[in-house]
Amino acid sequence: MTFRKVAGLLSFTRAAEELNYAQSSVTSQIRALETSLGVELFDRLGGRIRLTPAGEKLVRHAERILESVEAARADVTGGPAATLVVGTMESITSYRMPPLLEFLHHRHPGLRLALRPSLCAETRQALRQGTYDVGFLMERETEHPGLETVVLTEEPLVLVGAPGHALAGERTLTLDELRAVPVLATEAGCAYRDLFEEQLGGEFLEFGTIEAIKRSVGSGLGIALLPEVTVAEELARGDMVVLPWRPSFTVHTQLAWRSGRLLPAEVRLFVDEAVRLMRAAG
Image 1: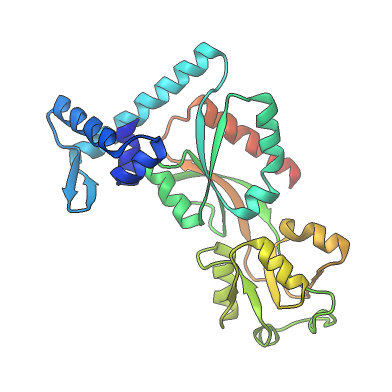
Image 2: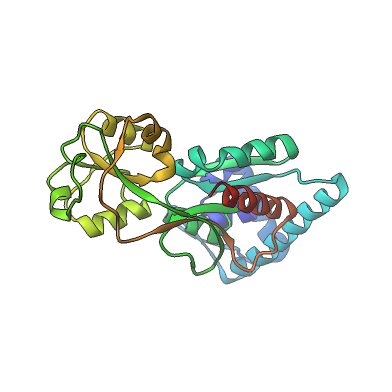
C-alpha cells in the first residue's frame, strides 16, 4: 500500500501525509521492500523521485495485490468496507452527488469516501497514476487515453445575468455584445470556461467558486456561463435570468477510472450507483 501511494504521488512527503505516517516510516518501508526484492524501485534525483523500470513493473502487481485484498475483505465481511478516493469538482459535488452520497451513507455505511476537489486535467492524471480510484469529469471529449469512462449526462450550459442587467431584455445577443460587459468565470482549467474563453476571447473576471460567481451575477456585477443545474434554484426564484445566447459546444458529466483495472467491489458499487442515480436525475 505504501509503495503504491508513493508511486502514484512520486513524493515520500505527500505519501506520508495521506497515509498518516511519519516520513521516516515511509522511507524505511520502501527501503525494506527494495532490499527484499534486490532492486531499486525509485531513482532519487535530489529532491525528486521517479520510478525505475522495476518500479513500473511492480506498480501493476501492487494494483492486483491490493485489489485482491479488497475483494477478499468484501467477500468475507459481506459488503464493501474501504475508502474510495474520488476526484470531483464543485458543480458535481454540490449539485449532482447529494442523492448518491445519501444512498451510500444509508445502504453501505462501511464504504468511506474521500472527495478530492480538482480540475479535470488533474483528475485524469491522478487516475492514471492510481492516486484516485474514480473521478468525475465535465468535458466535451468523452474518450480519454488510459481511462475508461461512462457518460452520466449531457450538462446543459446557460448564460445568466441579473434580471435588471442591460442584456436581459434583448431578444438575441452577439459575441460582440457579450465582450462589451464583464464576464465572470471559474479558474482557468475548467473545461467549459476554457471553451467559452476560446469562443468569446477577451478577459474574464475569475472567482474561486460557483457560489461566489452566482452571488456576484445576482448583484449585477456581470454575466456568467454556468451548468444549468447549478443555477436552477436561482432561475426558479427569479434571482437570475437566462440570457438569449447559447454556446456552440456541449460538455458531458462523466465518471472515469484507469483502464485495464479490475475494479474492486466497492469501486464497482460506486460506479453502478452513480450511473443509476445520476442518469435518472438527468
